Image 1 (cartoon, rainbow, N blue to C red):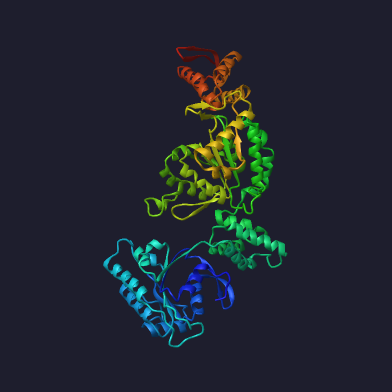
Image 2: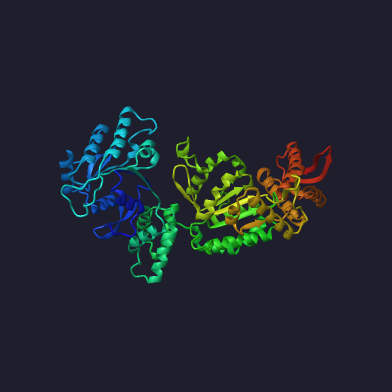
Length: 616
């Protein structure tokens, strides 16, 4: 068969027919394959590809058996049916014939002993012949032992009535089609040199390109397009379908036809197939308008982090115009953006992730958050991706993969990434490089439309030469100092402590370092929190909150005395020094018909803060 892009497994079948009596084929068996049919290249199912290869070698018929439909001739044509009925005593004229394991055993005996014509037997869905290959019933054990014996005792033949291509001695093979090689007893392939084990992989770049060339004329406008446009289309189609089957390429083509997508829309067609969504928020004009005017709004929520906000918006703008990974040959499958937020606790890292979600998707709750402190043990990785096949719960999928399939357009936040087990961090290599993960069920989740955000406190504290934990940066240090030391500490952590520099390399220059809260910013945060308390009082109790400037200064001094814990620390002190005593005082008051509560005094005795209130 002179076909330069014939799949390797098919070439191996044709090449080893003189020396192998049985073939165990597993892996990507339900895909379509490029084959030469009547002199033309076409995408065909596995059985058709097998038949075209066997027919070129002089085979007269191919029998196909599966536990659901029994035995039938392939192709279902009078010539092949009549030959199968004559040689093997089958009755195939009206429909497929059901067989027991004993009858199937007898059929294999006849096939291997046949000398009049070349025939092959394909056992499809062979993974379903037994319930458990390690615990065979007596009948199943006998069936496989006879199959093993036949593989060793069969002999190649030259048909008594040769046809074109049938001159060399070849076996009449038994071909097992399996989901996984371990679905058969392992000794069947280990103990017989006449059994060839072939695993069909996902198609490589060259095979996908050839398939894209076959499917391209079905896209509107391809035939009329200029050569450079055609080349760009083929490259985008091939690059965007990395890791997919050829059946998926055909499905994308059909989807494009249904949605009236042409040559210029190939990326949308691939994305639509991957994530199952037609609407792409990344290409909406309103998103560009929102991002152009977003700087002030973001800094209103995330105070005192000008440098971090600017860099985050730069990465977001790059994602919107589609230039993420543009320096690589192919970056289309990578996430839209990757951000590594590093810095002290309570300075706005998680808040900025929420703000990004609100900006892009209109709802700050639309982000997917994973607290990585919950994944400190290696076995907890099964929660993210699902248990491996065969383990309890593998069919439920993983929390991460399920969430991304449900919400393919989202911000995915991995909080406190340094607390995850190093083995779990390895999973992020595939997300950052290929933009996809496969769970225990075998389902793939695509991250190509997500923004990945990691947060970390790395670099704030480090270990000294004696192994003691010491503060590496502190409030009052310049931002340049904080950024340099935090970046160095992150590099040391991934390169030397974890010995995984490749993770840091995938993150690249997307590390965004947050500064400590300065006294000026601390006052802004404090005032914002006071306003929130006043709003809550108005909404819950219909009361207006007022206080003197002296009391405000007293509270401000208490809340901003230690800024090392950032805005969260300010909130914690405000809760204990103001909200708790305010609640205590109001609880004792009769508020019926009251409109205003004024804080007239604040005092502390034995570390207990009390407020004096005037309610009117």
